[in-house]
Image (cartoon, rainbow, N blue to C red; front, top):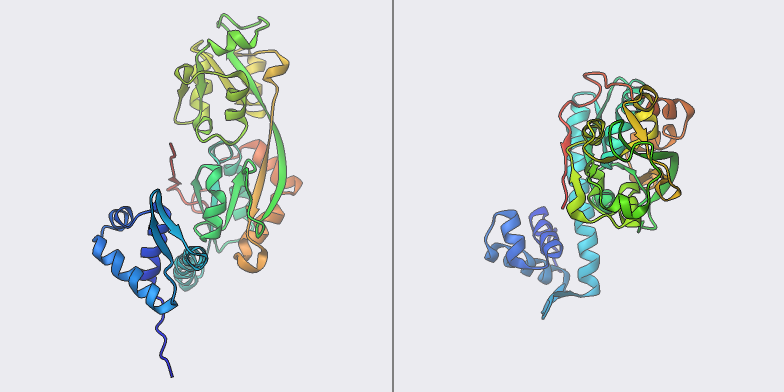
Length: 324
């Protein structure tokens, strides 16, 4: 009888890093180990599975069908291992953990109210929010790095995922009351020459803000990116440029005269937020609960109201992932 060995997390981690970076050298640097260690782990996998997994090619690595299957399974298994460790730890303290990935726009304007209301329904639930490029939502879910993802609909969605539209919103182009364009009908050519004051959602290429910039062909040297969308709008109040503000968030400033809305059909920007998750059988119960809850009128009111977050219900330390 042939004795088969278990695939170890260390071996899978080495292979997953090699796939992710396309080279043994880069994988070794990422994991802070030697190239020899990575090569040894991959050699063990090849021997155990009876598959070359990949060969070296002129432009990197060429993976066999078995190698591609192992890459997918390795990411899932490592993510499941991490999730299990977290869940066991949480269970020991009688608490559950829900990990939510969100786009920067949703995280800033809608997540606080939603999370406060959702967490208030269960005394044993902690919610961890991280901000990511929506293009990464699929991989984050498949690797079990997060349990749900919320933001604009990514261009490509894996067939195994659910994607539910739950809220449409509008963004307005605004300037300060003393800005030269205030009260003037503007043209796309004029707008291209303006300084655009933008939040983090301008980076990444997915969502309403990048689409407006592409539509107007705003050059990068006219774009200033701030640490938050609110900071960009605040700068616009002082006449420093054009900002894009959520309609429900800038309504008071418009009513008070601190901001003026720019007019033009090419400036009408409507977006939508979706919630993505794995099927209920593959996700923690809290993920399915949030997916159902986010479509309710109470959830919509909480998101648009922008209520603050209750301390203790929502982890104060928010992990923010920046992208280039």
